[in-house]
Length: 66
Image (cartoon, rainbow, N blue to C red; front, side, top):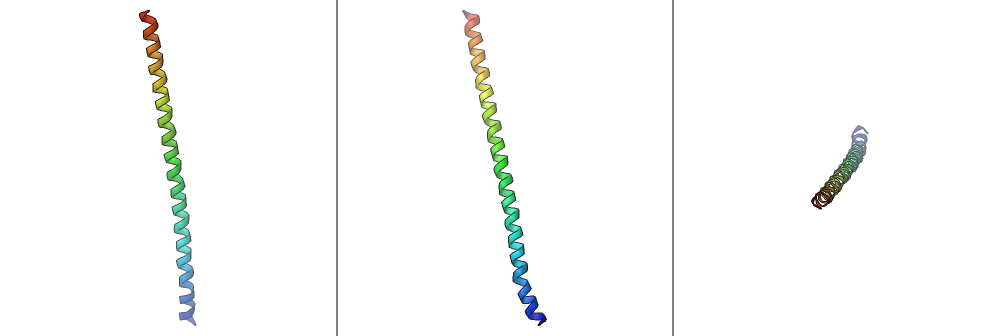
């Protein structure tokens, strides 16, 4: 009976480990996606700011030269 019980419990433990591993993997994937999105947003904001600054500088230079 003990052997059968142990054998029966083993798959349950394996299933629990797989479920936990899947949950951890899903959480890690969500974190990675969030980090990637944040990085992309930051890069886009920086690019927009740089472009706006360049346009402002060009406008100022043109106005000053005139």
